Length: 304
Image 1: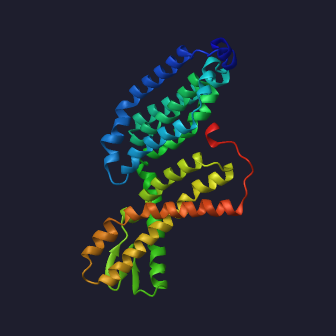
Image 2 (image 1 turned 90 degrees about the horizontal axis):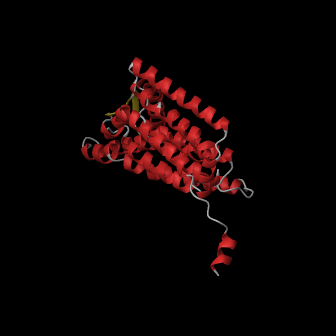
Image 3 (image 1 turned 180 degrees about the vertical axis):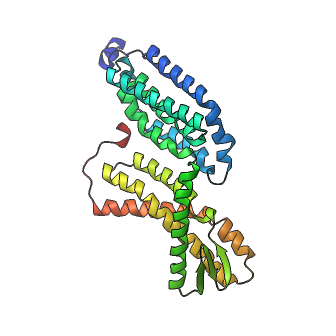
């Protein structure tokens, strides 16, 4: 009875413990060497309003890794292609050079982001192409847990604030509200409402890009459709932010001088309503694409 069962199932292959230990050891050394810079993420940046979403990115990354995992991936550790070792060393070297340059020039964000090419290099060098295809997209996704460099943040924030102010201004006028504008300040029925940096929608855009990236990696759709879903985070985030500013302006107009409650409800807490609305828009987009295009049988995304 037992012999028949063993012959049916086949002999169980032992886990390649040596290769697995090398991979885990290299990952441990890498994390230890970057700890001094990565620790600033949760000690400093993730405790600010702009990057408080950083805590959830590693959690989403872990869930994505679990969803994409297959036990047979361990077999790839038995025979790592020489090309994987070469490209892994190149990626690791690139990350280390980036960190040396960032440290010398005092650039904090590039110093932290250098962890990602180093991580990808170690996975490719010690894990092979199969493990790299499994973990590579998640490593790229992890970029959302890092703060933007100040110059890049300002280069994005200023035009986003301008777009949000302009669209809200015209939308309020279309709805026949008495609205005028001076720079990034809207006057609704004579009451000033400033569209400051926090109202630019940059935080919403960063969070929603991360969520759309997670959706694109898990949904069973063609590559072009998943790319479209990811990129649609930009117009959806902008549209939701414009609706938030416009609704705040309408509330200011209705409340008149008694606008303290408006500032608390709409200005301070409206951000809590933005994400559910954006998710509804994303769901409608996916449903519309499903009605417009009939997909042929596709392999599961998790096997990529």
